[in-house]
Amino acid sequence: MTGHPTAAPPAGGVADRPTPGRATPGDVAGRADASFRQRYAAEPAGCWAAPGRANLIGEHTDYNDGFVLPFALSLRTVVAAAPAPDGTWTVCSEHADEPVRFTVDDLVPGRVTGWGAYVAGVVWALREAGHAVPGARLAVASDVPLGSGLSSSAALEAAVLAALVDLGGLDLPTGRRPRLAQRAENAYVGAPTGIMDQSAVIRCRDGHALFLDCRTEEVEHIPFDLDTTGLTLLVVDSRAPHRHADGEYAARRRSCEQAADLLGVAALRDVPTDGLVTALTRLPDDATRRRVRHVVTENQRVLDTVALLRAGRVREIGPLLTASHASMRDDFEITVPEIDTAVEAALAAGALGARMTGGGFGGCVLALVEAASADAVTAAVTAAYAERGFAVPGLVRVRPAPGANRLT
Image (cartoon, rainbow, N blue to C red; front, side, top):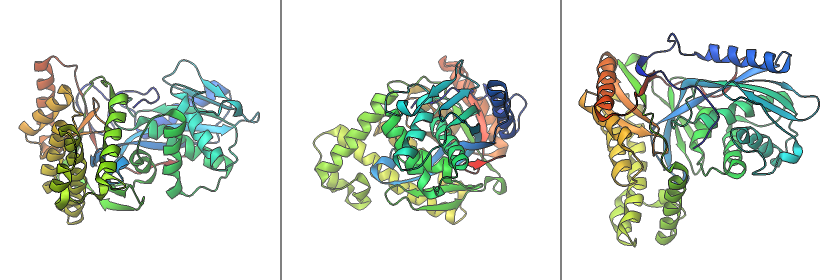
């Protein structure tokens, strides 16, 4: 999935918050504020932040009306903003050479392209929902890495949305914001994403994972406090270029929709685990059967993970994470050699579980490790990459953080 220009995680080594050379959320806010003042020669009305997200488990289940369990990251996108008296919208990014400016006449899907489409899409979706969106000047800064499966695009959408809602005094409760942001990405940008990314970056709470029913949009905040368990999560940015990600993502989604039609259900979420074997016999080819098997078993793995976390049995989720990766690799066929190498090396070095996170064909790996073993796992992944001739991976420790909010 595409997004706006952002910085990448540090190469090699494990980074904690804060780390020299890596921006903290406060640093990002300062950069957004400074960028606004420099670009517009004025003071912003405020700064709004939204996080990237990692998905603990539940991949490609969201658009199948299933279950997901993401959490927000401490890596953030910050938007400094103020009303624009001329009723137009202008946005600049610290990682783009030129600002993007658009008017009401440009609020037609396909008119604004590139990273600016995510901003225009939010304005468009708000207006389509009947809101009087104020013109605005915006400046973006971010430390959510681009193209790594950590939802840089959803973070941008959510931060812009929060800014515009506050600037315009719009009546848009938090629970309705994810669907609107998703509509911006689906209908204006043209990316066929599910509801998970926007829900996570908007609704997550500190120290919790977000258990989301993608059909009903009901959420439950599941305690996921790693600080008291002696565990940590490593995100490995594989540095793998996304290979046919957009087309393959769309193809997987079509395959799932077609399979649901063949099985006579509204979505694959409606195929029960105990009825999976029978359902598979009704499908016409092995590829479709494997796609369905992944979705149905992945939904069950989400439910099993939630049950363990509710019981405080955090270490026991490791095998479920690893089983999820195997299913994505073998049944959904969305991993690449860099991703599989990171998972294998992390597990061999003692990780309790590891899996790809994100839509696939590149991106990141999430590994659950003993905090005392983080350096050993980091060294093992880095060495495995060097042995295979891959680019040096980026590694960062993460913890569950809060969702979108106003900073100033």
